[in-house]
View (cartoon, helix red, strand yellow):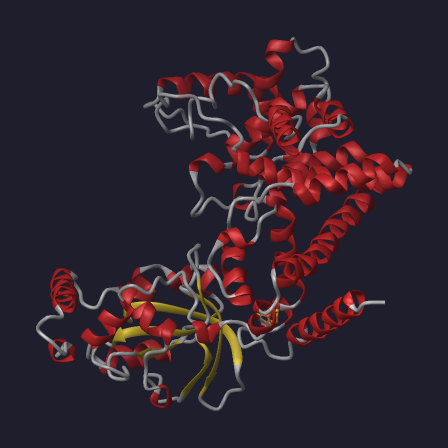
Length: 507
Ligand code: SF4
């Protein structure tokens, strides 16, 4: 079928491409691959007026949702109208067949609770199965795509082969994308700067409120721990930080060399993260565990009321280097070092160039050596050939812009120290960009119309964009319903242009 699309025999590359696509499709079992079905859904290559669920309800797709590469459904935040129900926003899961819902465990996974529509390639030709599926309460309705494509499958395969699921189709961009793309670099940064400042001050206000109850140092520990927990384990980490005074008590006379192992045992023990069984595979891990239990078994009863249940943690989809055990091991080094907070306070006072101040903070936060965790990613992993840092540079930036600088700033504001206040602010706005993440990736495409990460040159610009997402996108839906941001940007840009014209006018 595709061959007739090739206009001339000289068009050899088109022929290669068709052949490659045909061979790929022969190799792909079953065909089409799930990725292609996802791309068809994302680009809505469907006869959109004919969509019906297996039980006959009409489906209107106002927005197919945003592709999700983390745990959970394939598309988040779709806007759909199913049958006579009012339009609503929810998730969409894509599988090749209906049976995928159970086979992949979605029926028991709380991440899938908000799935409105189960999109499948085919219903496996058994209407009875389909009816049975739709009859069960709590299951999303099913939409089969096989018979509602807007073009033959091999043509769609060719058209979508190079479309990365990560790039948002042009027609799914936000309504603010047009006015934002009209801004030049200077104006865009003029817009992101105050948004970043709002985010910075908002965090600082949160730290001030906590410090009024818990004191400045305790507040710093709690928010450092939270940041080490990333988004999934922020709360159990915060809980452990709240127990720090108690967990540190009675360790004053511990010999210096024993302090870190003792703290690791207490934090892992109180976190419910010390396995009761030895690995019996990794000798070094078993020595580490035996030593930790030597500390913990004597203390466990005294701390029994603070031990976290294991269900408080989320480990699914986590990279081993980010595991809370490694993070708690790192935090134990910080807590064992009585000069840790004074070092941070001195860091902001010392006048340093940008690069030097980042390196100096990395030196304070990075731990030179841990007997076990520098060599192991997890308790079960073999000893690494090279030592692995307990904290990467990306995480240092995250801790600097989200915790340390707002904490230093608000403490200086409260203490009336203008010099430190200005310096914390200056470093925040000059800090190099942080590692990319899924929120930024989507926001760049949806709001700024580009997947190029370099458009945001500083961590503050990234923070500004995230703040806009929090203030506007999260109060609207994927179709940008009732969002005032585009209009605000247009008005702001017009005022700035008028102002510039007035300033340039001679005389
Ligand atoms: S919801 Fe508002 S801020 Fe978000 S993409 Fe749509 S128009 Fe832009």
